[in-house]
Amino acid sequence: MTQTPACTVRIASPLRSYTGGAAKVAADGATLSEVLADLDRQFPGIRFRMIDEQDAIRPHIRLYVDAREVKSLSEAVGACETVHVICALSGG
Amino acid sequence: MAETLWVGTRKGAFALRPDARRRQWRLAGPQFLGHIIQHIVQDPREPSVLLMAAKTGHLGPTVFRSTDRGRNWREAAQPPAFRKAGDGETARAVQRVFWLTPGHEAEAGTWYAGSSPAGLFRSEDGGERWEPVAGFNDHPMRPTWAAFGTPDGEFLHSILVDPRDPRHLYIAISVGGIFESVDRGKDWTPLNEGVAADFLPDPSAAFGHDPHCLVQHPLVPDRLYHQNHCGIYRLDRPARRWVRIGTAMPKKIGDIGFPIVLHPEDADTAWVLPMDGQTVWPRTSIDGRPAVYRTQDGGRSWRRLDRGLPERSAWLTVLRQAMCTDHRDRPGVYFGTTGGDVWAGASGGERWHLLVRHLPEIYSLTYAA
Image 1 (tube, rainbow over the protein chains, first blue to last red):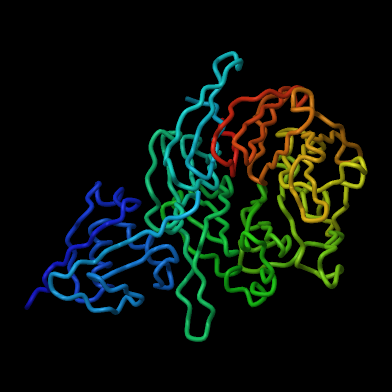
Image 2 (cartoon, rainbow over the protein chains, first blue to last red):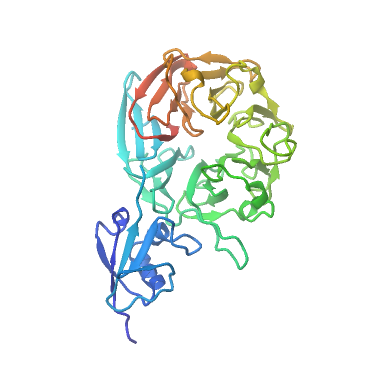
């Protein structure tokens, strides 16, 4: 069986309490959904802080695969691409 | 580390603890700096356990649990969340866990949570895993009951569990009304007769009212009070019609406010914190002169308590979860303001003094024994 190469996920600072402080982690998956599932397997609870119970990306979270913003969890994640998790912070 | 006032703020959780003679209070914290802490509640069945409703500005809502009186916290394995919407259904996601209530004494580990948008959730393992209460969340009338919302969204609060019967529940929805269940949440009926709703097209409607804070006396559970957008009310079950006891407040003060708290022993004694509800709804101290009002006769009369509070130019706002009492014979009364001050009223509010200033905006102030 061919294993999907792990991609790199860059973790926004508000989520690093789940990753033990790590700003970059590896996760397996051919789609964003699979990557997030693997992320949650490694760091339980992290997915729900970014993705709600209707599988929608939360309003103040932005997800990118390399330089392209992603709105759908079915987006393909290519080998060795980087997933960026960005938290849009504003106000006080 | 026993008696504690837990302060939930926009920027973290704080704790205030008195010295042995209760002369000085020491501030601890913040814990979870930067997190929005909506509510912190002790489990009266297991006093070392507390739950905390939290989120950050951008991350999803969650619940934290402590089993050592708040020294350490661990996130719930499965925070409150609506079920997945089916085809054609309106999909809802919890934006905020707004309210936490421990379950009945006979149901160890049971908790209830209220959310924004208005949803009801139950945990049966001490707050680790939460399930939607389908009887409310999927009730055919729920979309109508919770249709209106507030500028801050619609939310479900003031979850009450009858100490005599774990199946008997009350909830309140802002701009929705008060609802009752007698079958552990499987079905619900409105309980708003006698409550004014001046803003509704049909003021005699069965629901749509705006209860701000609903309380039930622990020793006289047939006695309920609530502070509403349109007055202060009392209900003595099995009656269904609320009585507006706020009409006994001074006319210049009125009976608008957010919190209402009860004496831990005496069902006739309650405290409210009137706010300005005129025109555009400032929701600050009336004329800039903050005061707490107390009744000791079930609402037939009210007495102003302001000794030690600022006499002028003090525009305070106190949110519905930010007032509490302790369990002393002549209980202390406490409130926290959106300006970050915590005030203590000794001997039932007879004399007030400032415990701490300059905290972030206070959302909740709760007492843990």
